[in-house]
Image 1 (cartoon, chains in turn green, purple):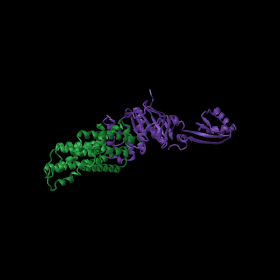
Image 2: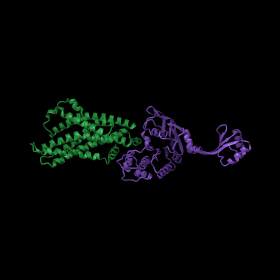
Image 3: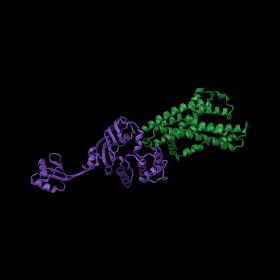
Image 4: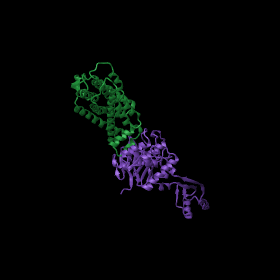
Length: 261
Length: 307
C-alpha cells in the first residue's frame, strides 16, 4: 500500500494546484492577522491569539479544506480516465480497491498537511504580532492533525458525488463550493437546527467537536450556549468513521464501474 | 501439456446489443508470433481485451497459459505485457517517471528494468521531456517499453507500430523477432497492414466483422500467393488429358467449361500452346495472372481486404 500511495503522489508531480493547496493555507491567516492587531480590548495576549487561531481553523480548515480536497479528489479520480491509463492499471496485479484506498490515503495526507500548514501559518503570523502570545503549541498541532483527519473523512461524501458525476473539474469545484457553503450555513444556524441534523452533517459536526475540544483546553470561551451540541471525540470518530466507510465503499463501486466502461 | 499460450473457444463479445466478436476460436502457440490481421473495427482489439480480462465475455471461454480467464486473475498479469490501443500515460511526467510508476506498481525487482526497456525501444533514460510533449512515435515506443520492462512470457500488442517511422518499424520488428527466437516469448500482435504481419508473424488469424475467417501458419498462407496462367480453350477435358500426359502437370484447376488455371507452368507455356493446337484444341486466350496473398485476403474478407 505504501508503494501505491507513493505512486499516487508521483502522479501529482508538476501539478501546480498541489502547491497552491499548500500556499492557500496562508489565505485566511494573513488577513485575519490584521484583526488581531485592531485596537480593541483584549483579555490577554494569549486569549487574543487563541481567538485568532480558532478563526484560522474555522475558516481555513473547515471552509477551505473541503473545497481543496474536492478538487484534489477530482484530480486523483479523473486522472486515469483523462489520461487513458485505466487499461495500463488493469493489467497489473493491483486491484481497483487498492487503487481507491491509495487515493483516499493521499486525500487524508493532503488534509493533514493543509491543516498543519494552517496552524504553522497562524503561529508564524501570530509571532509577528505584538498583541498575541502563542501558547499550547503542542495541543494546537495535535488539534490541527485531528481536524485534518476529521475534515477529510467528512469530505468523503463529497468525493462520492465528484466520482459519481465524473464531470469536468469546473463542475467538481462547484460541488465543493456548494458543500462548503451548505456546511457554513448550517454552522451559522446551530442554535436553530436539531442536534441530530447538526451531527449528521460532517463538517458542522467537526466544527462542534473542535469548539468543544478547544473549550475543554481553555482555547475558546463564551460559547457555553452551544455546549449541549458538542459531541465527544468518541462520538465524532464513530459518526465520521461510519460516513467514511460508506463513502469509500461507494467510491470503490463507482470507480470499478467507471473502469469497466 | 498445453501448447497454447492463448486459446479461445466460441468466444463471443457484445457491446450492448451489438455483437462485436462471434464464436472466435483463437490458438496462439507458445514461443511464436501470432498476427491478428483485420480491417479497422474488425474486432482485433476486442479479442485482445477479452484475453486480458478487461471486458466481460458474453459466451465462450478464454484460456491463458491453460487457465480459464473468467474474471480478473491477478496472478496472470506479471506473466503478460500488453499495449492496447493508444498508449495511456500521465502527461505531466517524463517517460522514465511514467515507467517507474508502473514498475513500482508491478513490484519489478530488477533495478535497471526501466532503463533497459527504454534503451530497447530507443528512448532516452531520465530525459526531461514530458510525455505530453512526445510525438506519436515516441508514445508508441513508451507503450512498448511499458509492455516489456517486467520481462513477460506473453506480449499482447495492439497495432504497436502505429505512428512509427519506417526505421522504427523495422527496429521494433527485429526486436520482437529476437524476443521469440532468443527468449521464446509468445507474442500476439494485431495490425491492419498485411505486409507488416507477413514480415513478422509465424501464424496468422484473419478476422473480419467479428468473425475469425482463417487461422493458419504463414507458410501455408503464402502458398496461396501464386502466379498462374489462365487458359481459355475449346475443349477442357482434352486439354487436361494433354497436360497430364505430355507435360506431367497435375497442379491446375478447372474454372468452367472453357477455362482452366495452370500453376507452375509459366516456363512451358509456348510448348503447351503448340501441342494443344497440334491436337486440334483451339486456344482462345492465354494470359499470365497472379494470385497474391492480398487478393486472397480481399476475397475472404468480402472484397475490400486489408491495406
